[in-house]
Image 1: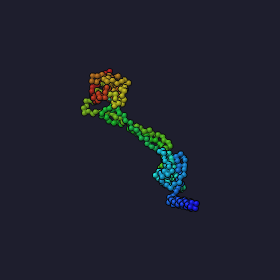
Image 2: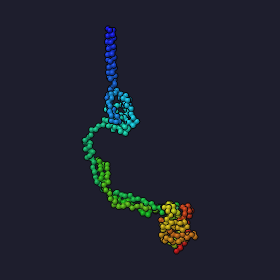
Image 3: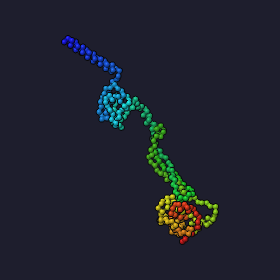
Image 4: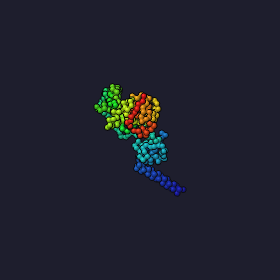
Length: 307
Ligand SMILES: [Zn+2]
């Protein structure tokens, strides 16, 4: 019994000593590591506070068996250290909290603001501005290989009166708003015509026997077809409204009335079409294909005008 008593009090002593050792151990540990309360917010707005000695976000989460879902993200990032806000926020991707810049002085210098305002001035300005003219190019060469550009109308800039509200800061323009504008002078388009270059011949005979437009004589005769290059359209409808026909249709200057019969190289043609470059002693023969028209080229031939 006595022995029993002795041994039980021995057990008590050992037990109490063990508790002391454990408490001592914990306080030693606590002295070496800094414990902190960390608030963890989940993406479903649920919050918990955990006591931890860890400082790395990943470690704190792991310690508390918190696993991020694939569509979740954490602030601060997993590999960073906990900040002095002791807060970890888990959000769905794309909903990350706006990071508030730290250590930024929010103190506003009142004088600076006043200064900024006093140096801003607004002025209403009315000025005359040029309206640049446009250049319009018209191709009347009927696809000829030799062309020249003729300016048939020179361009002229127009003018407009514009009223602006101009904002200056320290005499430097920072904003210009158009309040109203009025055209004073319309611009005049520059018109350039691409014309067939006349073949200059050393022989004077052509000019002497050249057909006076609408009369028999030697004409400069070219050929065309119904292609884009020749006509700028492909429907083959002539200026007279008739459908162009090979061995029949020719384009001639307006001094030839539509329907006038003209004999060229033994074939009787009918004037059914016009052409920008077909002026003076010029005639254009309609052909079925562009290749045929090219093969014809430019010929000076005797043309007989029938009545
Ligand atoms: Zn053609």
